[in-house]
Figure 1 (spheres, rainbow, N blue to C red):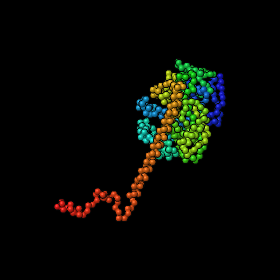
Figure 2: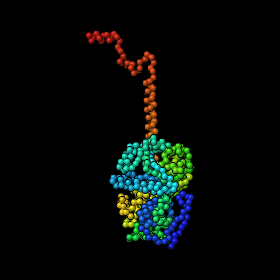
Figure 3: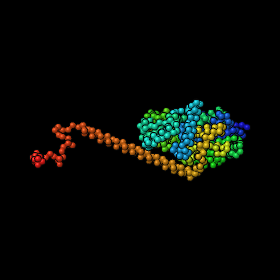
Figure 4: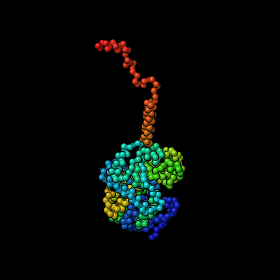
Length: 485
């Protein structure tokens, strides 16, 4: 028995590495299906805890969304805090939020302590509002800081616009403990660490069938068979026919990001903030890379398309948000498809004894994939039961083709609503500014009038007696006095 190797270009596009295909039967403790961020985190953590691990990947490491993201690492989920509390209650919401923070710290430790080459680590993330929502900002800051033990700062409009030269954004929530990394390099660094810990990664090895009954599960690939005590389904919408029931619970969503050519001083003048920026409506997400470039993600679509076809729309969006930049040159467009759940939370847990799932990370952020991998590995090997916190978020059918159409329409409606709300907010802001200007001019005119000297010998108009109140002639006064006597 031997291992067949093929060559592939790494995510950096410069170096060659070997891809190993599974061509022999294998027996392991844990089989992970999918070599994305979640699957590789399971493999790394389980191997470090002493388990024998094999990862099966139908294509190559990080080939899809895991290798095409903006690299923002921030606590939280796609579901808002208020919705999360409504779904599971306050205490469980706090536990789930704490798990998302653990995911953030796992990536921080892995990316920095392991000294991944060229990871491009930078601190801070800013969430900006498209409307003037100061009262909501205060309420949210109090909840995050006091109830969910998260370090946050509220930024007033002036500070946001000092860092981002645009009138499109109002208040902001700043997360100083959030950070950014090069997502493409991180996923390959994660694979290298998993291998170093003892995990075996087999690429170009799709799963043909799975038999999850019995103590020892069976996995069939085109050229070999595998047995494992536990199977972790860490794939995406590409899990295929053997796992169609799981794939059908995910709405496929494509998102594309563009990297601009170097913009020089005009970018430094327009965008001072060095962390990542995302708007509260989930439309704009961007950050500065390589000192004077922008990487900018466009809104999602539920249909696959040629990435380069979105270069123009991203150019126009950048010009809309930052008119001072004008039309920028796009150097690269990258993209991938993620699986988005109906309920807005990731799918994490045990489907049946020994069969685990870690999927549905669309719009969830890197922290959730890291948290899921760590949690499942510890659940298998340590008996950690916290995965049950995700039990309320069951596998829900995503609606097939109808769901995709509905998702597209909802996305268009959401973007339209956000644009209308933003336009109205900016109109009101201009109206308030004009009203303040009129009031200032009126106050100044009154002040100038009060200070203006009056002509000599004239009484102020306000002190002149009215005609009806004019002084009576002296003889009439005398007559009145005599009558009174």
